[in-house]
Amino acid sequence: MPAYLIVDAADIVTDTGETDQRADEYRVLAQQSIRQFGGRYLVMGASPVALSGEWPAERVVTVVEFPDRATLDRWHASPEYTDAAQIRKTSIDARILLADGIDD
View 1 (cartoon, rainbow, N blue to C red):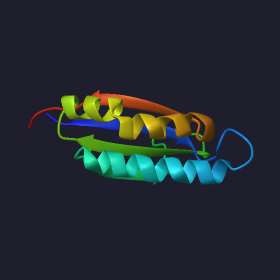
View 2: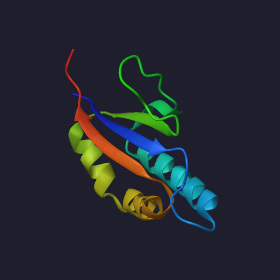
View 3: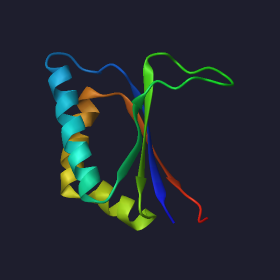
């Protein structure tokens, strides 16, 4: 069954200095690592429209589908992604969620 990575991120960076470059570096490394582990972007950096409730205008959403939970877990623990995650922690305000999909 597929597993989904859901990212809720501020469309701004969190520290000072070369943050735009660091955020871009994170995005490149994260995208490469996701594809290496068979991840497929379903939504990338989109500004959602709230049909009910409110969604802050400065936040964006990314959704990535992995073949299964085990693959998503391997990706998340991989050196390729953990290196990228260290960059993310100082450049992007993000919440990262995992959700298991359902079989058809």
